[in-house]
Length: 87
Image (cartoon, rainbow, N blue to C red):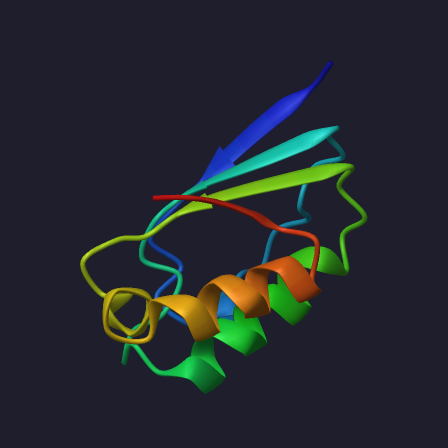
């Protein structure tokens, strides 16, 4: 099993200029948004699921305050994209 990790994307997915490596599992260690908005979280989910990882696991970072403030809604968003959120 190949696992990759990343963190601190801060909503800047379009600025990532390298190829995302192939892996079975992608672990995301927080700060996927910069502004903490629901829209930024959805944009991240759309972006990360396009890589076709068999599993994606996310924890929230200090910039991801929408998850703390709108927990049930954010958890539903993760579920819609097949992403596992660890609280």
